[in-house]
Image 1 (cartoon, rainbow, N blue to C red):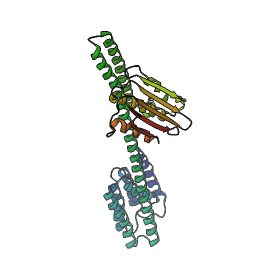
Image 2 (cartoon, rainbow, N blue to C red):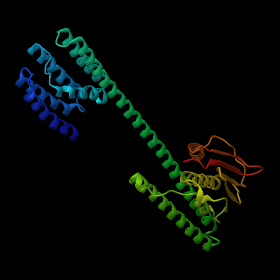
Image 3 (cartoon, helix red, strand yellow):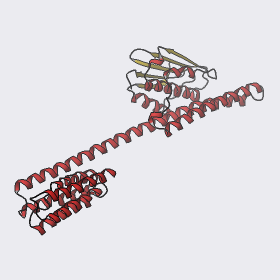
Image 4 (spheres, rainbow, N blue to C red):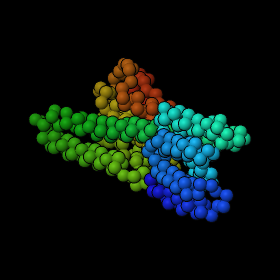
Length: 351
């Protein structure tokens, strides 16, 4: 990393200058060579931290044996505290244990040989363990942050999967219904068949537009993301195709926070899609949204034949998850007498 080269470029001249100007320094030439040379071990502190630790502390122990005293004694050697930090920050668990044994062993060896007074040896152990603890803490925090980012990515993937399902299912269902109507009327009413083809063409164009928007969403940076659906888009769900969809919005949908407005639209879109797909002999689908100071309530109902509750599919499961992520609720079940009803309540405070 470039910062390590800068660090080496600063510390090597410092080691040389200190070795030259200090009057109390013994074995001056060897001290300068060892102190300046070991600085280059910092270049491996990220990629091979155990090697860097072993090199610095191993050479230090060997030099002390040769000289017969703690060596080298230059103050620039304080950089060695970066190595236990790096070892516990970037090294594996096995490397951390081996490196800790090397470092503490070197201090214990110097104390046993009389190169270090007991007080200095104890201070050395404290400094080394503190650096190791800091490295472990930064490592834990970094991994926790990565886990949080992975969780955010997973939630975003789930959101995109729900959006893709909602978009494709909504438009494909409309195209399938119109295609069936066109086939049924082609022989007796060619004009109706042509009208059905026009509606299919329009639905296909809308589906392609929304899918292109999702592709752009996946390819662009977060700062460039295009806005998704809003609460004011609820009126677009109204349709005269069979069965017709009536939309009623009570309150100011434009005042809803973006996440709430987008979720409300997607919930209504999925509920309408399910009604078109599963409500047999339905003559109408009603979408009613009530927005007040604290929440936004959604009710989508149809008058088709009642159907068994059964196990919820991906669409309903996604609706429940979408609502729960914003602190709201979503329920679906048979309506009173006939049809199927989906209700959802989202708090305005959700962000």
